[in-house]
Amino acid sequence: MKKFSAIFFTAVFSFIIANSAWAQDVWVNDARSVFLRNSAMIYGLNLRTFNAQDINGNGLIDFADGEESGNFLNAIERLDELASAGINTIHVLPVMEIGKTKALGTAGSLYAPLSFTKLNPQLGSDKTALPLERQAVKFIDEAHKRRIRVLFDVPCCGSYDLFMKNPELFEKNTSGQAVVPADWTDVRLFKCGTDGNINREVLNLYKDYVDYVIRLGVDGIRADVATNKPERFWKELIDYSRRQDPEFLWLAEASESWNEPVVKNGVFTPYDKLLDAGFDGYYGNFMNFKNMKSSREFTKYIESIIKLKTKYPSGKAVIGSFSTHDELSPILVGGPAYAEMTFWLNAVLPVNFYTVDGIPSGDNFVYFWGNKKAEKTFTDDDYYFVHRGKLDIFNFSRKPGGKNIELQKSFARAVKFKYYAQRIYNSPDFKFNELKCSQPEMFAFTISDSKDTILVIGNHSQKALSDGIVSFPKYSTDVMPVPVQLHSMPEPEKGKIKTNLLPYEIQVIVLNKFEG
Image (cartoon, rainbow, N blue to C red; front, side, top):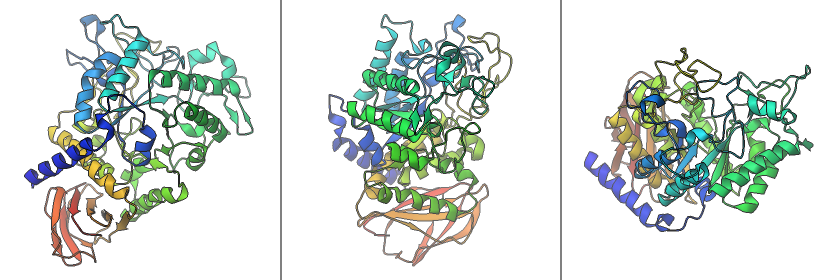
């Protein structure tokens, strides 16, 4: 089975490479088209840690000892790693200059920008004479040489330092104080206005950001907490960007489960209105997969995602947001098996593949020094502030990553299998069928076109399941199953499949020349 899988993946991946635009020498942005085909394999990363050199292994970057944090130039060293794993898009967490007053963490939060037109000097290398902006351009160019599209993240708020510099850009409460959104004590809420009266000063700030990143060569934007700005604000901004680059991609951090503003009586724009404004896609509700109470709830949600094509003929899509930098590492949720399940669901579902730096190799993002008093700080916060179990965005910390080689191999296989699966759900005769299971913890479905079918069976629980039965009326024992991902072999019979499942096990089987 392993030998066949290796041959299968090699053949599929080689075919995709040979028959795509990967052979181009001149970069032409196609991020939007790729995303709308659910063909983006997205890797979220924090440049400040992406290739950080923690030589002494204490989890922190000690500059006095000659250690180097992640930056635009040393990040280039890891691009081949991503390309070889099949990643074709990176989501780069905010790279603009950040505030240091009322900061969170010893380096400052990436989401507390001081400027929307100046890069974060923390991301510059002192090993070159190139100015910071040229270093950023070089990183982006090197990504493009490897056929990797680059999305930059735009924060939803401004730092306290930016508020002190330009208070007119920010919301005030009845006492005249700047509004602090939720528990983000290091930022203040922009005054964006309403659909009937957009604040042009803030809109122009974001237009300046769009101009800047397009000039750098960026292919799209991920909008942080996109729900806290009016629909018209986004429509004007997105239209503005598309006049410069029709393929410029816009991804909204939004979910169907979000229904409240970040502050009382604040602006809230639901995900569907964001799509109406021009966003190509959004995060969706997959981050709540771990809390879904039944397999029917999960498959019903998949069906709603598929209907996006009908509702929006021009195309909309979501990402497989099972794990993001705002979510607990799947290793903490359910161990390596749960992480592996998220990889393979990304691979087989009609969504854009998404994961975060460190998760493919099993990082749990538990930092032993987290929230302890710091020996040295570069902000006014003298504690190593972290969100336990989440990618560090506050300190000069180690490169993300675990030591689970088998999980890393499974991740790479899942990404490469996605190149095969996306052909099926981009087919005009694509079908999704939920299959009934004998046990409530199980889920099963097929995706198919007129030629092939992919069968998926999963265990949505932390306990092993024995003698599970999947009802599959169309299935005939004459069909030859090709196992792609499983730890135990199911027993196919006419009209049904018997299987045993380990905790959080997912089984993926290809049925060639079978329309399921």
